[in-house]
Structures are given as structure tokens and as C-alpha cells.
Image 1 (cartoon, rainbow, N blue to C red):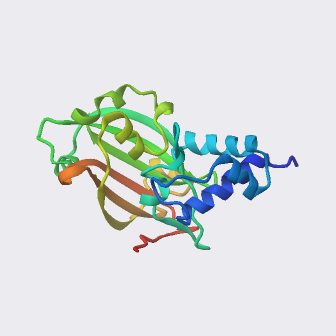
Image 2 (image 1 turned 180 degrees about the vertical axis):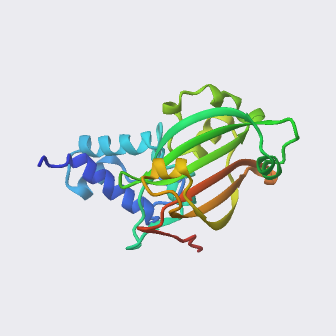
Amino acid sequence: MSKRPLYEEIKETLIARLASDQWRPGELLPSELKLAETFEVSQGTVRRALDELVSQGLLARHQGRGTAVTKHTPFGFFHLFRDDGARELPESKTLRISVNAASRSERDALELGPAKKVIRITRVRYLNLEPKIFETIALPKELFSPIAKLDARDLPNTVYNFYEREFGIPVVGKRERLRACSASQMESRYLAVDVGTSLLEIECLAYSHRRQPIELRISRCLTDEHYYCNPTD
């Protein structure tokens, strides 16, 4: 069996430290030289690990300042923990991006008029390479119309940073509702479980400034190896 590249080991260590809030959103990481000394590896190895985390939306490079934690890491709004208490970085595969007439529940949540449309995103999220979450996202088309033209492969894993960077619309808060549900035929297909398998549904409504609702997200989660916890300070 081939040995894992050293930069991947450094990347996993950095992810674990981000998950434990060693560095808070917006905080600068130590320099590449300092990290290389800490981990006893070359600067090139550290740089490649950092590049991977930048591409995944966990870190951002700022010319003349260094590398900082992004405002919205997946850990800040992602509340599934492994049974042993560890946190994992969710990866996403977008299945479809479409424009649809808003359903009644979408109109009510997003405060849309009767003729308004939404951009609907369907994706599967993976934890430790296993499909664990089937997710549907609804966005007001008037706010995010360019997303409808994206190839599904081009939608980033961490969309909250994407909303702020590309549209100037930050997520500043959210409301969650949890309920038990059963896997539908489509969910059973993508989560590799039987139809009717028990799932946890998380309905999340994200707000921008002045409590403007900008995203309705329905996440249906397998909890055979994970549990939900929303830690508070």
C-alpha cells in the first residue's frame, strides 16, 4: 500500500485544528516558515497543504498579510459530529442546478411573491468519503441569477463564502428546525440505504443583513455514525 503524501497529513492536521477553533474566522495563521518549523517539514509541503485548504474554501490568502481562516468555514455552520466527538470536513457533489417556480414553503420561508422563481441546487455531501447527507438548497433567483448558468461541477463546496465573494451577500445568521424523516427513493439511491431508512432532517433558513432570508436548505442526514450538536459559547 502506498504511503499518504506528507502534505495530506499536514492538511488533515490543519483541518483538525480549524475544527477545534484553534484559529477563529478571520484570524491569520502562522507563516509558512513557522508552520514548517512546527511540523518539521519543508515550506513547499506546508504551501501545498495550504493551497488545498484555500481551494476548499477553508482559508483565504491576503497579499501582504498572509493566510487567514475564511469567515464561514464548514465547521461554523455544520453541526454533525462523529460518534467519537470528532468533526469532519464535508465534501460536496452537486447533482443539479435548476430554475423552478418557488413552492409554497419556499415562498413563505424566503418571503417571495406568488410568481417568483428560485434557483434549486441538489447535492450530496460526504463525510470520510461516504455519502451521508442529501441536500436541497433554494435561493431567490432575483438575488443569485448567475448561479443558474453554472456547471454543477463549478459550484464550490462552501457556498456561504461564495455568496459573499461573488454577490456581496453575507450570511450573518440562521434558524434551524430538526425533525425525523424517512429516506425517499431518491435519497435511498444517493445515500446507499433502503427506502424508509430513518434520517434526520435539518431545515436551515439563512439570513443576511436586516434579517433578509436568502437561502432555504433542507439537509437529510444519516446519523448511524454521527450526531447533531450545536455548541454554544
